[in-house]
Image 1 (cartoon, rainbow, N blue to C red):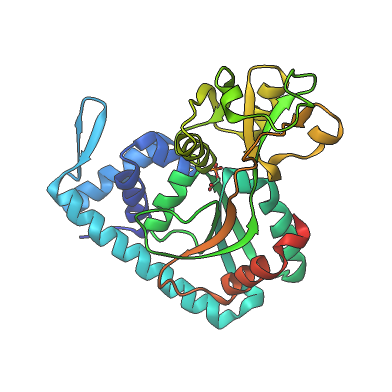
Image 2: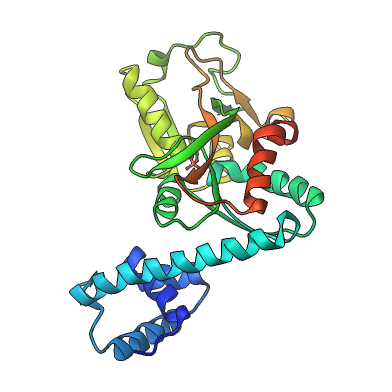
Amino acid sequence: MHLTIRQVEVFNAVARLKNYTRAAEELHMSQPAVSMQIKQLESSVGLSLFEQMGKTIYLTDAGKHMYDYGRNITSLLDEADAVFEAMKGVERGRLIISVATTASHFATRLLAEFTKQHVGITISLDITNREALRRQLDNNEPDLVIMGQPPDGVEVEAEAFMKNPLVMIAPAGHTLGGRKDILLADLENESFVVREKGSGTRSAIERFFSRHEIVFNTGIEMTSNEAIKQAVEAGLGLGIVSIHTLELELETKRLQVLDVRDFPIERHWYVIQRKGKRLSPAARAFKQFVLEQAKEFI
Ligand code: PGA
């Protein structure tokens, strides 16, 4: 059997995402190039690895075996990579970081400061939502993840490094602005512009309202905090966002934070690694930097 590591990587992505287009996007390849790699792999294995039913693709039995081997192959390569990075030392390492969409508002600032202190380190940063981060940790892809709460269903080591309060925002001039101690029950007729399902912010908000037994009316869903702030500003509803996504909007009075009882919703930011993961010196240095210095730069 002659196969290439690239074919295995492409196969793993398609097997994990069950979707050629999304795999192509993730790998920064065209979809025909992805299909071609899979065809070549299937012809070298001599068996079909996927079957298509309607729009969905499934792994065949051979595909399931290939996926087990595929993940072992890439994780061995990662391990080898980590050993060589360790031999190069902290100043020449490579760092693979994934952060929650909401954390992207400060992650770039953190990385900028970290690279000033460690000029030789190459960084790859992926920004995605909580659900995708859980999958990445499950697949042992990133060195470290920054997110709002350790994920369920994956064994991880998580350390909190900073508070992450979620506040309620309204456009300037909203009737609730300036009111003190607004009761949650007074908000039952309001509609909220919310993040997509799979977002940590969204699930924290839903948990909060259900704990208080208050109806939470979701209006438009958006995958970006920037878009939510713009929608709230345009009067499409109220919003609930991490305080770390707010920048000049408050100073320039385009948005206001409402004084709602039981708010803010208290959360924390965590730096997380898969349990048992051997961190490279570069990753260890970044983790220490986040735990000790992050607050100064956010
Ligand atoms: P998200 O992130 O809402 O952007 O997914 C915050 C979190 O991890 O809780």
